[in-house]
Image 1 (cartoon, rainbow, N blue to C red):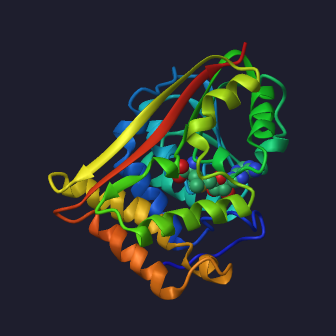
Image 2 (spheres, helix red, strand yellow; image 1 turned 180 degrees about the vertical axis):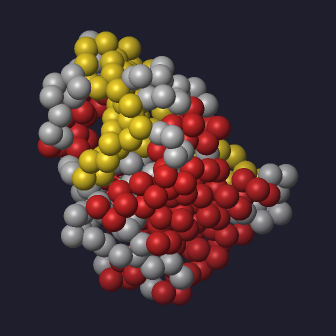
Length: 277
Ligand SMILES: C[S@@+](CC[C@H](N)C(=O)[O-])C[C@H]1O[C@@H](n2cnc3c(N)ncnc32)[C@H](O)[C@@H]1O
């Protein structure tokens, strides 16, 4: 069973800050690197902000694709930042990174301080993503770009599909909503960015599809990224009275079967790029 530890920095953050979650974020980023990072490369010398860098799982891939950038990586969690710093020291020792511990809504940087802003799986955890985007737009120079990657748990469909499996996914969406987030945020990226005043908003869906012919993806994505994420809310789902131990465990067992030789799993991420006019 996965364990989850909330931290005072973000007490309602649905995924928590456990070692298991740190590993899951690493597995997720490494498995999806081609899908999510292949078309993001910033010129050397660019001032880049990664908001909500977490344990640095995306940071190392961002730095690998954009050598020579001047990166500022920010997160609410001091402990995650320390892990991010260690990960970058090991995997990108030459990188020029400023680490900032703080809330992305109150960044202590001047207007227009960055040429590019990048954030991945962060907006979905904010109670007011529009306010988050406004705060990030302030520190982006006119003509600078923002890149936002989000999931959408409503895009998950799989075989075999069972009611118990579907219910476990729905519990995660519900708990995230109860904590002020939105596990279905991917589909909202275009309207959110447009309403925040960005222009040239382009959203491209990125599909992960795993089946018996792609066992590495079934392991890296279906099991170690998606099922691990759902399984981690077991205690909260039980505490909230959403489910019983038997029903939840059945749902997880059923989800695991979708990664087997006769199973299939589909999930869509959304990657948006937009300009600060
Ligand atoms: C799901 S993790 C994603 C981490 C990383 N971007 C990745 O893809 O591996 C979300 C991160 O956003 C951070 N976060 C949430 N709200 C934040 C805020 N208001 N300001 C800064 N960071 C925040 C959390 O602490 C957490 O590290």
